[in-house]
Length: 421
Image 1 (cartoon, rainbow, N blue to C red):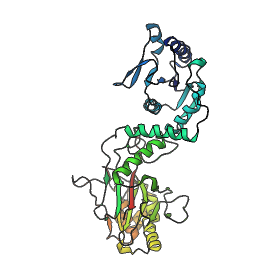
Image 2 (cartoon, rainbow, N blue to C red):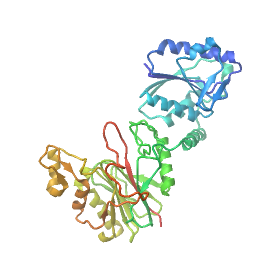
Image 3 (cartoon, rainbow, N blue to C red):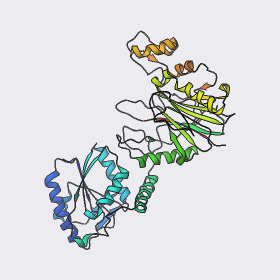
Image 4 (cartoon, rainbow, N blue to C red):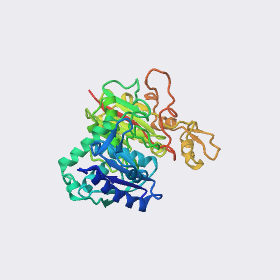
């Protein structure tokens, strides 16, 4: 049984109000009979010029109805917008508010392919859809759309992009944290959680990671990336991120790309490389002499496996960098105040150096991943956790910008670097 039912009247061109009522009355009766009291959300979408009054203040449509017909609409929410992308995105927000996954779409047969094309762009595999034909008379249909051509798909994507660009930023201003140690031949920084358009409560608004297991579609993530690129000043079309394995593999750009890797290095101009972190440390590497750079994702497993030093070694071997020229900056991550591991896992950090572990004799000792990274590399002088933000003083790298990977919140901090000169 569907948890939500969506009735698509967007493509109907109705030549009289009575025909509209006849079509709706039959469909609504059926939906109410089978789904009322069972589905969490019943919705009608229509375009704003379809025999209805547009209420721009509340983003909905007030159908001109008699008292008799109004009774049929009591169980339905009506969403009306001249943009199909906007209408479906509003519906998606309402569906997500109710944590719904299973949706039945009742749609005129000639619009099914078009509807599926929009749904493919705005929804992920988290949702399941079933489609049912909306029975209408031949004279009520606009021009049919049986096959989506490549230009038509591009037009759909452009409509969605334009709508997403119009949305306001959520949870504050998009901010990029930078380090004073890295010279301006590199565009670099660390993202925060704010300034994007992702509204899912369990994700940061500047979500930059798409997955079939999440509710955020790629189109939303791409818009977040576009906004980040615009703010930081890099080309979003040349953006590469690590493919995490929680190990120490490093991809040297220009060579064969491994299936998984937690570090990337490059000396190519205009290419942006990125590593994510949350509890894990996002690390950025820069050599202003050889004009090479790198990033790494260093979780506790990757830290012990030496992913930071593996990235440094890749820069030395591939670009002839000197150790003393490489600047390494550690990004926001979980601090020794908050990160614990079971005793058996903490032993490896204690063996590395006792200073990396606090309350070692407890069942779950506290681990200092940043300090462990310094000890594992064997050199400390170019490591930094010093950042420039908006001039308001020192920031808390653990609690201010990172996001904890627990059941109530999910998100990432990204470190980015681009060779710009």
